[in-house]
Image (cartoon, rainbow, N blue to C red):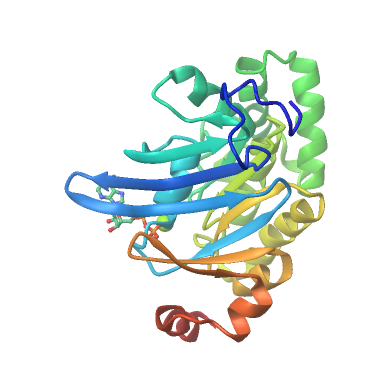
Length: 258
Ligand code: ADP
Ligand code: MG
């Protein structure tokens, strides 16, 4: 699909060349409003870091992008496809969006290699040979080619998270979502995962990353977004965000994490 392809949404909406568009998105869990009127455009190739206090809605926001959560109000358009109740739109979006979770979410009963080839074979119809070839190349890229035959439980947390990243990349996603990918790791393993993410950022991948690793944000983010209470309170390029945060809530948050 090209940036000008307008056939998928049936209309040439403004901003359609963006990787992700959220317009007036609100979401409730029961009576509790978790997201309020979120407007967000992510350009192709853009790296966006999302931070904010616990419970501010960061996970919910990115989980709405691949429909792990449903929004009730507003529009979400991912890679030109409007997310609706139509399961075909959800399928199409999930094919293009890779996600990495805090808790790795690998299949414990499958080897690293089997974890990596499962979706390409089942969802994309790849042959085992092609899927394995790609998986091994990606495991090499995240610097654990020698772990292909092991089970997740035999790996360190940092290695497991790198498998999770390789597994997501095996689907050739156009967009990668990360939800606090280093928060469950022992400190000495954080760097090995961030290094892989920095490399991915350098390759031009569109990335939305929830993280409190502010050094990482400074290094790779095109834009840092601060959320609080289900709203985007402030967003800016890293330099402006870290040196001159405008909002009192952002200042208070940064004084805690920096
Ligand atoms: P964050 O990732 O910023 O910590 P979340 O998006 O996980 O925030 O959660 C935002 C708020 O929504 C929190 O108050 C949380 O308790 C609540 N919440 C999250 N998931 C659910 C759910 N499935 N049902 C009800 N409330 C939820
Ligand atoms: Mg979260």
